[in-house]
Amino acid sequence: MDLAPETLQKIESLFPKYPDKRSLTLPLCHLVQEDQGYLSDEAMKWIAAKLEIEPMKVLEVVSFYPMFRRKPIGKVHVKVCRTLSCALNGAYKTCEKLEEALACKRGGTSEDGNYTIEFVECIADCGKGPVVQVDDRLYENCGPEQLEELIARIKEAASADPVTARTAPEPGTPAYKG
Amino acid sequence: MAIQERRIIYKHVDEPGYTADIDCYLRNGGYEVLKKALQAKPEDLCKEVFDSGLTGRGGAGFPTGMKWKFLDRKSGKPIYLVCNADESEPGTFKDRQIIYQDPHQLIEGMAISAYAIQAKQAFIYIRGEFINGARILETAIEEARAKGFIGEDICGSGYSCDIVVHRGAGAYICGEETGLIESLEGKRGYPRIKPPYFPAVLGLYQCPTIVNNVETLSQVKHIIEMGGTEFAKIGVKGDTGTHIFGVSGHVQRPGYYEIEAGSATFGELLYDLCGGPLPGRKFKALIPGGSSTKILRFGERFTGKHPNTGEPFDWGVEDIPLDAISLRACGTFLGTGGSIVMDDSTDMMEVIANLMAFYGHESCGQCTPCREGSLWLNKMTTRMTCGHARPEDVDLMKNIADQIEGRTICAHGEAVAWPVQSHYNKFKDEYLDKIAHQGDGRGRYNPNGYPLI
Ligand SMILES: Cc1cc2nc3c(=O)[nH]c(=O)nc-3n(C[C@H](O)[C@H](O)[C@H](O)COP(=O)(O)O)c2cc1C
Ligand code: SF4
Ligand code: FES
Image (cartoon, rainbow over all chains, first blue to last red; front, top):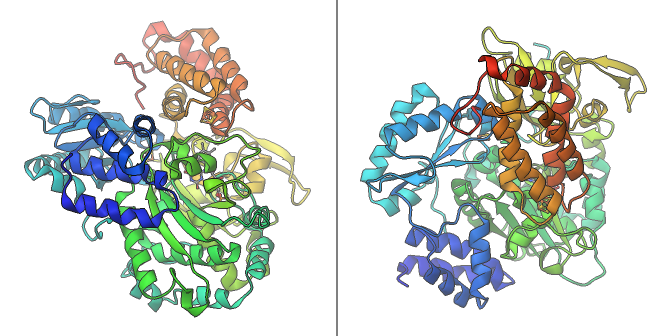
């Protein structure tokens, strides 16, 4: 498997932090997914070998946690919170509008491969709902008035390099190391 | 204005010019309490926390000092401290502000707590979606380590403890403390059966472990600063300190408000601080402390004898004081303080369908009543909002909830049951009315197969 040197380096730096190797399952899944875009069977086997556990144990984790995926997605990942506070403020409308503007059905990827839209559960910013998370960036108060701008930002993100776009921190935020 | 915020935990949240970096924290007196704490005996610090009467801020409200007392110190195994930064109960967004805006407050609180319980290592289990929060915490930990506030030989005291930030990956159940521990061990977040797995005895790696919420651990700093007995003077009997109310939904000014326990009422919070209902609307219902707590209906009366004062009370929702004891007397809970407000434009059937979609999705699937019951409720309530409800569904819904409550490994079962039971008690008539008029075009229905809110 072809992992970027800095991914490998990050992975190695994690081992001394934990008393037990298996604890690294989630961190490794995150790092490999960020690097590869998704977790292939090969990737899961690689992680298992690295942690000296059965591949099944990695699959078990990958299939349990909603943030891990076994298939590639669009260049830009749009997550719309659908839970109560956001819904009371119009999250369903927001999602419908995004689906229309990006020509992408929720739960799927647009034909041009640019966007994936998903409904997600509460992202703990309920006072500013509806909220939309675009890759690592959070957008608040995404009601009808804000949508034009949000759509423009999403389209802009799609024209950037996908990997950089996906892991770029919010302005003013330091880089995540592990 | 009658109502006053009392910002202790949130003193610097949203303060202009206040930043997350250590220099700003130090300029504001940061890490002084840690230095003072390291001079004290660990057991004395535990006693301060016990005397403070602090209750956990993660939802269950269990006394923190008591939990620390349960630690198995005889086993000789290393002790772990875990900070629960999973924050995933819908309506709750209070820990986020501490993590993003004042991370050193949490780190100082954790360092003091870790020393008090003599933990060997500490973890912050942060929900995966808070990727920027994880970045901020990691940087803050590095800064604190460089200055000797965590890591080897903290402030020259001879005590060592490091903090590791560990990201979850989108599962609500990993907020439950034993689910969290399993997840931290690299497994599916399946809650453990208690007993034997009380974390204070058999927790992370089968070692004694304390799991506390972000706000709880931050409070510890203030308890040690002012002393347990002083802290206990804030608030009311049985519920000391301040609470952060995260208000969302149909109010003019949603947001977070820190209030001394019992010093104001829901009416004051919602009208004075949150600006009241949206123009032309009236409040209809309130979920007081995160979506799993029982819903209250505006217009209903709560009567009884107050457990603290023995005085009889007769309150509407607006009159309920903002403390755990009074809310319990009204048949619900303070929980996380995540209050969701609904006005008269809200269709309660859609509300329950929305919540059941959440709890159905998040059941870990270990126990039959929760797994089957929450999925059934999800399907059924969704169907009802699409215009295919039957009158008998209303009783059936309640029946399913009753079958789940008390029959599961973890409190997710109650989190499914309580909203349904409380809706049944308070909005049954609205449900039946909507069902009776299903055919005549009155009311909202969604042809697309999902609820409109
Ligand atoms: C289904 C479920 C989800 C929970 N989610 C969270 C959470 O996201 N954050 C949290 O701090 N506590 C959560 N809790 C409560 C924890 O189990 C635990 O009581 C708490 O972290 C203990 O910390 P405290 O004593 O400081 O409140 C949850 C409990 C249950 C049953
Ligand atoms: S109650 Fe639900 S979430 Fe909790 S252990 Fe059982 S199935 Fe899992
Ligand atoms: S309900 Fe959308 S962020 Fe909480």
